[in-house]
Length: 309
Image (cartoon, rainbow, N blue to C red):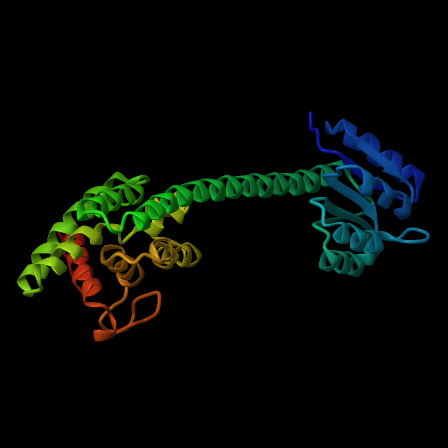
């Protein structure tokens, strides 16, 4: 049995009674009816109505007025309008005003059932998706707080020995490995490759060590990427890729503000490791020497590992 509250509005009592009987026959047990838009608005202001079914043309304030008032209430109420077949233009106006669907008179039970099921199913999916997004945002916030706590500890301990930085970095790196075990293996391999390349370039040992230790934090921002995008099998859609690209900026924001050379380098790599020599990368389209040396080293190591895997 369907539990959603449905409000039916029509000034013609026979039609009102027909709709009530039909809805109850279809299994909708919570049906409220009224014969005017003004009374309907009072009900909408006091009850949680899932679906409003209203005739467009009624004495006094009609269905279009009621649609406008529903939108002003900013509720999740879905709207189906009823109109005569010769008034299809009115139905289009109602849809543009915010109605979800329309039913033409004379009405048939099959049409009513199909339209209502369609609208309520869409409603359920939207509510489920909203709840999913809310839970996802909460998880991201919790993980970000954990990371921020680690960074706060890191800032306080800047005068301590270097091993304190290394331990904190390893803990932050674990966050990037949290969702994807393959990411963890990739991080370890790329870290070794960056060290070898930095040594071959003749960089000072201290700089080599900083690049080696901090490069595993390049994908820290991926903690903000939804699992269904991060772990998706197959190519991402354009919208999904735009979300994925944000991990560079988010990772840099998480790391921003430290006085430590380790964290400053990690921030630099996190932000620019997807920039490309020819300027086709992201997030800023940097090219050639505009890209920090540490990120150039990392990018080559990253591609090398991808080709070997």
